[in-house]
Structure formats: structure tokens, C-alpha cells
Image 1 (tube, rainbow, N blue to C red):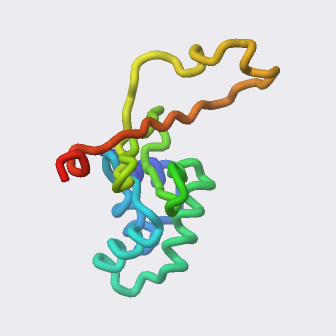
Image 2 (image 1 turned 135 degrees about the horizontal axis):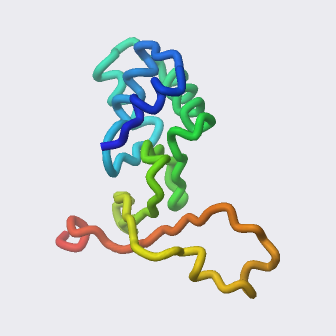
Length: 138
């Protein structure tokens, strides 16, 4: 389970009912919802929440560094609340399901000095692709 609500409170982020609902919808492990999915789930909890409020709240959480925008393909951006746990993503090439993975080792060590072209590396994003069990059995 992510600790998104706790992290936002510790930052002193003003917790309105709308912001709380968006954070609650995003809280959890392996959560990678689109903005429209967040909105649909938020409306179920707080019917008066607007799409604009959801989009603005997601944008604020990304700016704060508490949520990560994930783009794994040409589909809609997804929002990942596990911003403070280093991880990579495993994506189903058929249905687009995303799981957080924590492989051992250092992906920076896999990039030889000669392939860095003088860059100072600040981060690594690895996306593993495959077929999930549900799609494989269909």
C-alpha cells in the first residue's frame, strides 16, 4: 500500500474533500490509473467532484513529486502513487495492465561509460513488456 495520504499531510498540503478523494483513489500498490479512471472512481465517492478538479489535483501531485506520470505506450498517461519507492514497470502488450517490479541490481551499472556520451545520469526508467496471465490464457 502506498502512503500517499500520509506524505501529502506531512507536506502540509491543504486536504480538501476533493483532494482527499483523489488521493484515496490513487492509494495502493500497483495503482496506475488514467485521469478518467481516477475521475470515475472519485465520482463514486464524491458525486460533485469535477473532471477539472481531478486533472488539476493530479497535476499538483505530480508537481509535488508525490505521484509519477507513467507513459508506457501511446495510451493515456497513468498516475502512479509509489513515487518514493524506486521501481520499474511490467506492462502487458495486449491489455496494457501495469505492475510495479523491483528487480535486483543497478540499471545504471548496465550502461557502459562509452554509451553515456558525457551525460550525467539522474535517473533510469525501465519498462518490461510481456503478456499477462489473463491475456495469455485467452
